[in-house]
Length: 165
Length: 165
DNA sequence: CTCAAATAGTTAATTAAGTTAAGCAAAATA
DNA sequence: TATTTTGCTTAACTTAATTAACTATTTGAG
Image 1 (cartoon, helix red, strand yellow):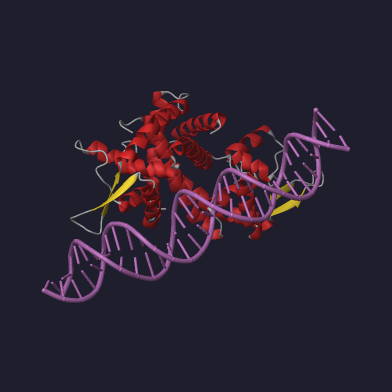
Image 2: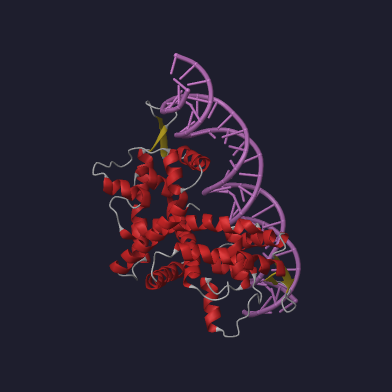
């Protein structure tokens, strides 16, 4: 906390950036009555290929299907949060009729999560706003700068996830 | 939400990174009984030069003094959150005797926030853990990559703050 | 084949962090 | 002087997160 150091500044900048992105996300997502967090979880369930976790599945499996179904515990693990937390958020989304839970016939402990048609429609409706906002946000950077930044952040995220906490 | 796009991936990666950094911060800060958010606000009050906002003050003013005093409304504006939110967090920190509020004699509406000696000691105590964790985190990147990444993220943050939401 | 362990999920209670609306007191200004 | 602005608080509420304790189902080791 004494002298300026790039590492510390980078951490604080990422945290501030994320807070601002969350607020910006809320402005978009509240149009359809959800929060940024709920939006992200819907993207997970749908299988948006830009989700870091899903991205791997997507690129690895040519037969990847959107909205093929996902478990609450998968989301909890991918986002590194507790299962009860996901239960709460899924309950909110189920109450809004954006997500439905289908019991798995092969394993009756499991509940397969899928977006409802209304849920898919909601995602599609806000997608142009997401695109437009992101293009405006990154307009100051070249494609190369953008990709280099993403690459570096992905490396950092990997280290962070590997360490655990 | 259809095809992978660098912009969308970057946003989601930043959000995930920030969540992981917050958890990592909590592991460190809970040693002294505070949260990451409370830690950051203490760094603001103290005038840590790595805070994006403070950084400017620091480099602009050679006579910058640590812990010179700050207003709740300054913090709210810098962090882009509501004043009542800051009141709440300051109340928590005051109850822990880490922050003290001194009424301004010149303007009796104002309350000048400062860290207590105990507050400064707490910051100093966790500083080595912060340093060590950050060095480990960024060890995979060169100094140039680190600085380029920071620079790009600062540009994005500036755009985000300028737009408003 | 049975019984213990692991897995999937929920419920309950709690906390932190954030919001808006309403209000008070002091300072600035028209 | 009277109104507006500023700085802050209180109250009521929401979301997102946690841990601990629980049910139900499946797996797997003897």
